[in-house]
Image (tube, rainbow, N blue to C red; front, side, top):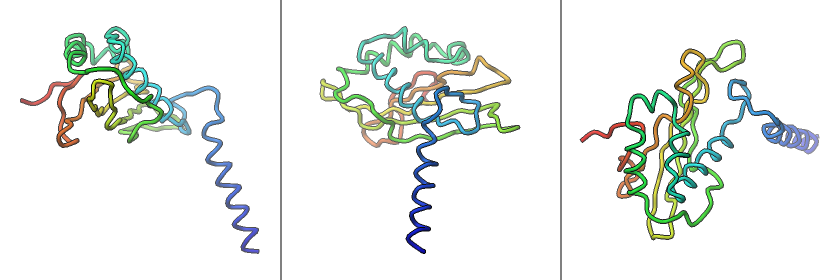
Length: 172
């Protein structure tokens, strides 16, 4: 009897885990949405933009509010100068992923932001970079907030502080 129960629990667990990826249409307002694939895809776009020195594509990822509050163009230019080489391994996953904050009502997100990190990404120039990225997915009250708000280059010495920022000002 115990074996049957274990077997049934295993099947139920498998179905619940696999159902996360069955949706064809991703909707970040959906209470059951799984956002990690979007974080990975966004991180891939960020890395590709740096690899190809494509400032325009990187700037397009940022929210209108971030562009209004910071000189994103200048910050991206500084980040492009800081970043050396091209990534050696493709970004297949992010190191850490969080839903930062959210507002939910009637089984729907009205506000949702995520944070994700990629640690120790190596380039062919012998450099290693770690990123901390903030992304607003849903904001019913202020849609101009939707998009990236910040990208931090994490300090390689301690993996805690920030070396450089886009969409934020580092304290002196």
